[in-house]
Structures are given as structure tokens and as C-alpha cells.
Length: 59
Image 1 (cartoon, rainbow, N blue to C red):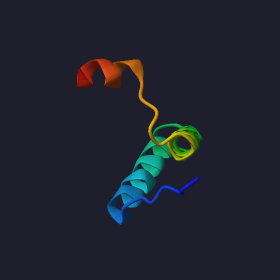
Image 2 (cartoon, rainbow, N blue to C red):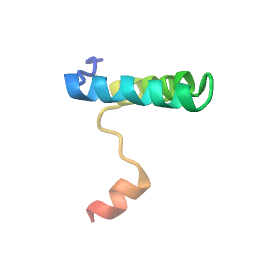
Image 3 (cartoon, helix red, strand yellow):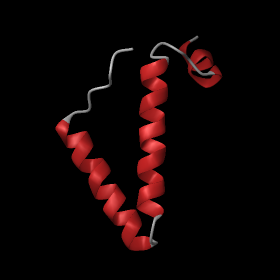
Image 4 (cartoon, rainbow, N blue to C red):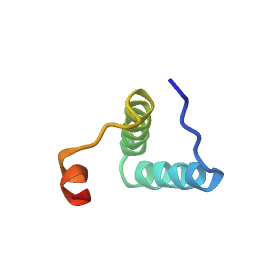
């Protein structure tokens, strides 16, 4: 499994979003961060997997 590499601007944007959401509601940014980490982990596990939507739009 090849680890994902995020651009420094993407990492900064994620950090800003976490802070924004935590300001909106305590813990919400942490939930967002967990969701981002899970999405990245799924991409790392199956980098070529396509969803039905992606497959349908590519046709």
C-alpha cells in the first residue's frame, strides 16, 4: 500500500477547516478530521476503485 501524499496547501486547508468547525461546535472539527483521515485511508487501500457515479459519468 502506497501512502497518500497531500500537498502542503491541502494540509493547511484541512487544518483551517478543522479549526473552523471546532469554533462552530466543540468537537465538530475533530469529527471532520476523522472523516478526512478515513477517506484518505480508503484511497490508500483501494486507489483504483471506482464508485457507480464515477463509472457512469466516465461513459
